Image (cartoon, rainbow, N blue to C red; front, side, top):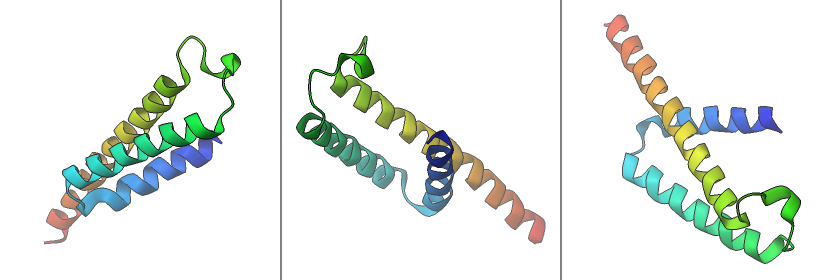
Length: 90
């Protein structure tokens, strides 16, 4: 599961290289909101073993923020590599 998540972060980060930062922010905020709504609707509460010491909503939001930060880090690295490649080709 961790490998799939890492591959997802890398692929999304690379593909988002040419997309405006505001759009990436908005899409991730919508994704986090939808994830919280689906979590509240489909995860049977209380399920204390998964979400201790935090609540379910906070864990879902925190996970979404960590994924977003991962996307941004890969995006920055991808932009640096892409720009360096273009300058070397000229």
